[in-house]
Length: 323
Ligand code: ADP
Ligand code: MG
Image 1: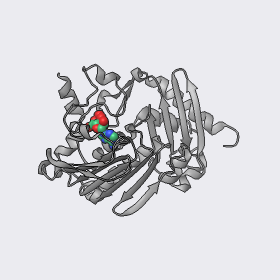
Image 2: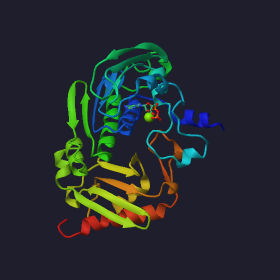
Image 3: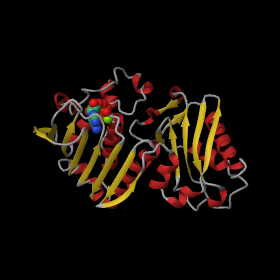
Image 4: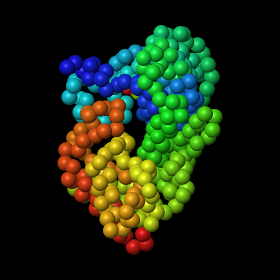
C-alpha cells in the first residue's frame, strides 16, 4: 500500500470534533500558551480557534492547505514510529475541502497579519489584516458541499458534546496552556494554564470532582504513571470521569481502566466507579497507535506490564497515609 493511501485512510474529517482535534493540535504544535475555541450549532455552523502561537508565514499559508505538502512521513514504517502530534500534513487541506475556512495569522517577523480564505478547496484570495502574533482559524458550514457526509452528523447538541470532550481531553493533557471554551455563546470553562493538572481538572471537569483527588505517582520498569484519582468515598455511579492518556495522547483503553478499578477492590461499594486522570508515559515502540491514527484506540505490546504499572501506582495512591 502507498504511504499516501495509508495517510488518507487515517485522516478523515468525520465531524466537528475531528476538526477541533486537528486545529487544537496545530495550535499546540505552534507553541501557543493561550487557546480559545468557540462553536456554534455544535461546530457545524462555526468552529473557531484563536491561538497566540508562532503564526504562519505569509508565503507559506497556501502551502499549508495543500495536501501532504508538510507531511513528515516518508515511508509506511514511519507511521509506526512518528509520535509528534501533527505528522500527517493534511488536516488543513482536508478541512478546507469540506468547509469555508478563514485564516488570520501573523508571525513575529510580520508587520501585518494576513487574511486567507479558502472554501471547498478553492482559494478565495489573500489580503492584509490585523491581529497580534498568532493564528485565528475560522471554519464555517462544515460539509456544506458534501451532503452525504452531512447526513452522518448527529444532532447539533451531540456534535457539540463531542467537541466539548475533545477540548476537555486536550485541556487536561496540557495544563501549561490556558484553554477557553465557548459553546453556543456560553463560556464553558477557562483553564488557568499554570502547569498544574489539578488546576486544569478544577476548571474543566469541576470543583466538586477536583476537591478530593489523590495524587498518583508511580514507576515500574519503563512505565511511569502520574495523575489524580478519586478516593473510594468519592466514587460515583458511572465511569463518566475516567480520563486516560498514553504519552500525552488521550486514549480509551480497557487495560488501564481495569487496572485502575482493580486497585479499588475491597474499598468500593457495588455499582460505584472511581474517577481520575491517569497519564502513562512509556517507550513509543511498545504502543501500537496505528490501529487508527485519528481515533483513540491503541494497543499495548505488553498489556500485563501496563496493568501492573497502573494498578500499583493507583493502589499506592489509595493506601498512602492521609488518603
Ligand atoms: P500538520 O500539522 O500535520 O503539519 P496541518 O494540515 O495540520 O498538517 O497543518 C499544516 C501546517 O500549517 C503545519 O505544519 C504548520 O506549519 C501550519 N499551521 C497550521 N496551524 C497552525 C497554527 N495554528 N499556528 C502556526 N502554524 C500552523
Ligand atoms: Mg496538524
